[in-house]
Length: 400
Ligand SMILES: Cc1ncc(COP(=O)(O)O)c(C=O)c1O
Image 1 (spheres, helix red, strand yellow):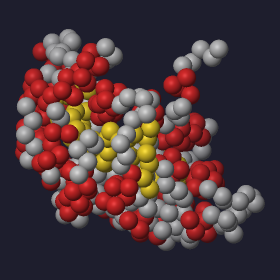
Image 2 (cartoon, helix red, strand yellow):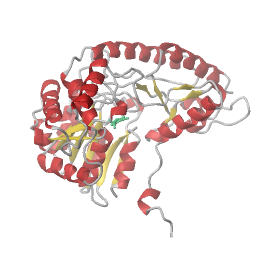
Image 3 (tube, protein in one colour):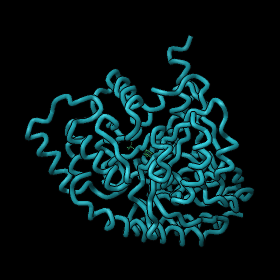
Image 4 (cartoon, helix red, strand yellow):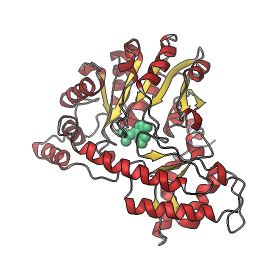
């Protein structure tokens, strides 16, 4: 009998981490590698946030806290939701965890029974389907191709809903495509959801602040108040505040769900780091002026990468409005041969060729449920991005 539990057999290790590790191993061998696979900003955490953490240590905020967040942080989160999303949550409607990932995990483990379906628009963030599977639920991937802007259409949502549907996970702006839903698009999806009162919505707004071209971010419970009693609005400080390593995520939702999530967290990790929580209070309440400054840099990088990739033979790259990813199609490279005679049959073959031949690490679209594409993270310097695009262009030109 295998020692490892059956539930682990159904999930795969994160493919983004796999590629990053392969790139790191090649780097350690002395290869010149440009890593564009990571899902985190390359900017440092702002100084005022670091200082708040140092003060927390000096003050002795080094003990256990309330399981799902300190009163100070919950208050700051309520303020954020009110100020930025027109959503009114009381502190007992807030859950804080060790990263948005834990909050998502808690929400699904607290609610999904065996066989319950969770609708996951594809391409999706790699963790959604695997977390659903760990909870013994069934992820229902709904394909959202490039000609739909990689977005879920109301008619596809309607068709995917069954009696077993428990949740729709809606991520905007999206990892891996950068696609962001307009208020009108959310309203059209909400119209469908209003007709299906048993379906809950998990709005993953993790990339809320990373939007460009004057795009106005909206969250679905803000657009349709009728959905508020069955929406969990998920967010965190990882991406906009450049705090991926601090591990603070949070959500607002109905008290019954929040209470269940706290019960679960009390038997797993207890509270998130007291020091990180103090830092997150400063992130949410402190100056926000570095966000547009960072966004201007991200936008310039996005434009550079989109233009660079569209110069490559066999690639096509749309321009997204959010996050720090682009999701080009590599359909035009499929069926062609590399200089050493290997046939490119899948996006994984193409990505492997890029890494082996030119030392550029990106993630194959297969990992995100929509192929043949690949994800490029442009959270890297302009010089690195320019060089990466040149290398990809050279690699594509060599395909026969
Ligand atoms: C779409 C999306 N949601 C949630 C998360 C979780 O972020 P964290 O656990 O760092 O807060 C990520 C991280 O990559 C993400 O891409």
